[in-house]
Image (cartoon, rainbow, N blue to C red; front, side, top):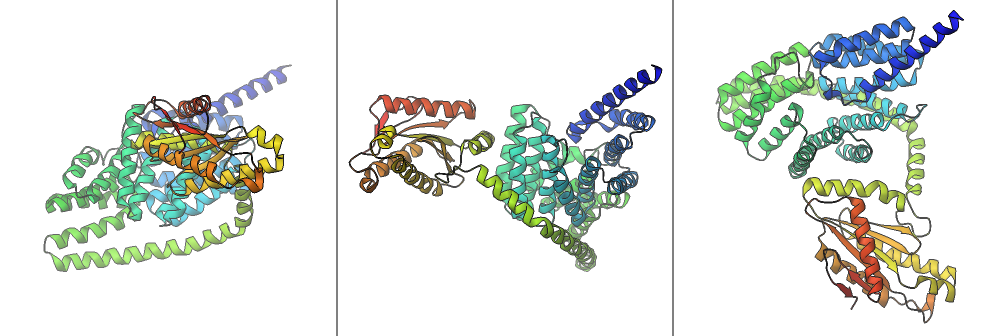
Length: 539
């Protein structure tokens, strides 16, 4: 009896420990204050050891390593990460393997070993897909973000953008708005890395709108990104104003990321140089390089060496500038060589699993398509429309929807045949898809039966109404005689537009549907717009 009671108590203790650990793991990293959480985490390590749960012990140590790294103890963090990952590989523990790979990807990215960061991000992404029970959306989001960040740091910007888009779809399922804020920051930084300053600036607009809407604090990493973009657009004074409050705490024990203080100092030095204040630029670089030496920040130190050469040249000290540039060039070439070799290893591993991944992507694409028309289906709409709506709200751009329904479609099926009805649906789908192809980011979908949807990002109501009247006309004037004989084919349309930042994507879709039925009630073969716009019969 005593043994049974002890077993029950041990089981309860394990469940409580696992629940407490999962609550910490699921929280956004930067919402954890190291000074407040570190003792709690170390207590969980002891509990796991007493219970004989090595897996929970190692998962908790990963959190400890992250907290130590953020407090500046990079060597201790590195040792823990290495030990835990080695244990996970040896014991083939799937959960610890995912989490250790994820943490190592982040760590290597911060200290500048981008190839190792990519290697571990790929491993985390491959491992998270096969977890049993299935991984949470938060964990899958973090793995996808790590992969996007790693691709961006390695200069594969197309792959990075694709992964950021995947991560954004996942973030729509996460109630914590901080996750989406971090995604936007990393996307803005990557766009700047790629040289697309306009896209980076547009993403900053989305960052500020999202932070304002959810009352979020703009942390130092995001401020540094904004400062870099300001500097790239010629606003050096604005960049300095943004960065000064951050660099004042660069030597403190608590900061958001291991590399954030040093990265801010490089950007501040560049801003001072652009403003003509070379003395302050050199001071910032001295502080930066000391931080890099203390924390092993290889890539940031390479950036600092490049900026040091620029500052010396700006001051007319050309011999010193040449020597500094040679130092930068040698360090940069060494870093690039390491990255190329490791990237080759990663690409080989990705090639070996590529066929399975392609088959999975093909299956996913098929699951999002309507088999009859080839258009996207309702499942795709439910996943994609919230993202487009949020982007429009954050960037202050327009978004219009058009719900299209064929008039008296039952008559075609009954009078001609169901085969004829299918041919009509396929041809209308082609006409809709052709309209979608003329607008960036637009897509057409079949909602079900004879009802379709056209989503038009960046399009206001007037333009959407014009486009839909042209669609209505092309449907009515198409030569349907080989398919339907004397039975005409027309469509009714309802158009709704996002405006003033109010409502949701569900409201927008519901309004378009209601306006469609107004078109039906007013005589069909017409377009009715939102905001009380009158119906227009197709010419």
